[in-house]
Image 1 (cartoon, rainbow, N blue to C red):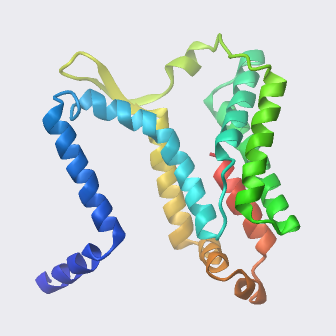
Image 2: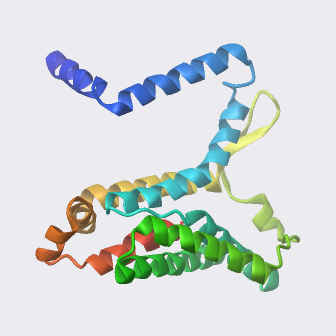
Length: 233
């Protein structure tokens, strides 16, 4: 057992992830030593919430990268999905599930537009998605007139929070909706890529798309899924 552990540690120390982990630990140690406010409960929760959105998007982008593609347009698709969902809430009302469903549907449709353009035009995905990034942002500014949205209902502004408690500093903490969504997306993406047939097909397409096509994998269908999965977050 001990020899096996040493072997795994030696194998991990040769990977790039090992050096990245060491660097992160060193940065945390330096910031903790130089700032007494860094490694505090409040700061950890604040950083977790602010980083959750990027983490959620990273789960979707990870799937696209595994399939051999890339999506630069995801900030624009996320902005459009958020704007459409927010506009619906302000005009009609609803709840978190309706808002989430609308945003996911809009993002998925925009992602499928990317997938269709990449597959049909046979143009590198980075060129297509850079183009749609500017196109989507331009359309958003045109239809929204660059105006901010205000007047959201209390249920939207207050959000959802589980396991809330009051810290020693007097502030309330808990697992907010962004953190819960990030945890759910990490679990879902991990299950998809490691436990499902679709995940194995995505790996196959990313490894060799021509070979995957010869064994019967639907390349267009895989493209639609991975780009839709990226943008429905």
